[in-house]
Image (cartoon, rainbow, N blue to C red; front, side, top):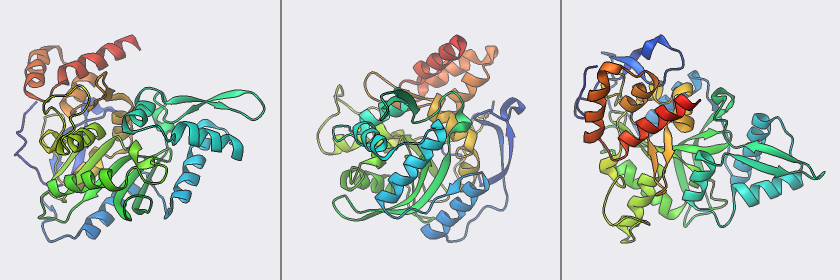
Length: 345
């Protein structure tokens, strides 16, 4: 596997060869850059429309929702389809307000609901109970993907518009912030920080379910977990997160590049959308390659770790160990954890 540094940024690409030729492999084996990469000026609106076209071509449903009530109604519909159930209005009201949008739940509680406690009990009007999956981790393709853009949250400190949101079964689990080409992507990172401060908690707090954030200026694209953003906010406000006395994976420096099986960085938004945001890749990452630790950190595995987990190479164990030492804390734990879980399955 040819290793590329974080500064070796490729062009946008069109051709992808899956690892081990498996249709369900999460990381593409080889990313082939296109020589026709977009270099002209593109506004945020241009980038957004290009991204939406790619996602729709990959099987995402484009959702038109302009109010929180429409977002909640869609959530109800998506959970009914996933669980083959029809909520009565009373059942839905209790399930939504007591479990999904509990007034006492924060970001970490909602992360736990997705990562660990994704099956919840519905108390039915007739006295029976039924298990309700918020996300299906066994049959990942049963999960329904939608894309929403320019949703306006009016319940925060002031009205806020979000660029692009990916909904999984109606829950906003991935938030994408775009900046025009030429603008540093750290500005997108800072914008998401402002969302957390001003609006993610607004209304029913559904946007606090976001597990992964993606920032891009078209040329450079990175991703990071919700706790990276959340703990960074606490540090900036002078309130260290529980159990933390110094910086770890809590700031922009710990955002991640996506890459192919050779560790070749896929930085352009088009290539990123066609690989990281491919349906099976994104669902695998959300359901199999995130670890919620005892310290309440959500760790998203890096591409080389995912590839090593899915396609272990005995002769490359030493290389993997050395890479884990160089990269973000928790890497070795993540690979070992998932290999052990796969062996158990």
